[in-house]
Length: 120
Image 1 (cartoon, rainbow, N blue to C red):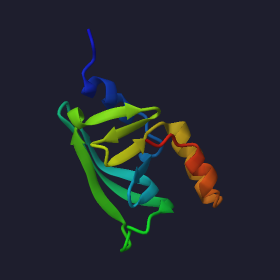
Image 2 (cartoon, rainbow, N blue to C red):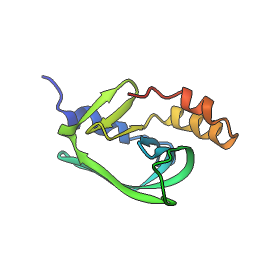
Image 3 (cartoon, helix red, strand yellow):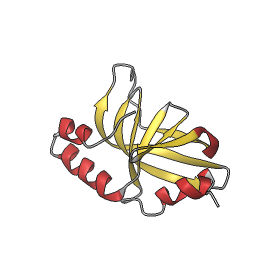
Image 4 (tube, rainbow, N blue to C red):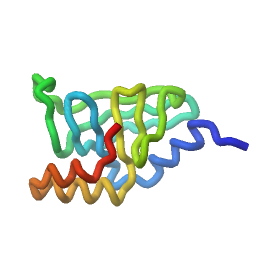
């Protein structure tokens, strides 16, 4: 029996590193803390709060601190080690990867941190 997307993707959120993920979209790439994480059979919802900016885009015109992320599982797909939603944002949930990216970012080695990620 083939697993549905909820069954495939929801376990990605079971063992997060300090509730952190790497989050990327057109405004930049960040280590974010997921607050109010809600994983249901229909959808994923959370409040993303910036912990460490890794790469900011010029499209980020104001100081962004937090925002809502989410969507239905139907609009999400796996890409390498990441989860992509509606081709608008991409997150990496693997605890060891997030820890490594965070350590590099704290050492101002942002290019090395970015190199660990498999972008779409």
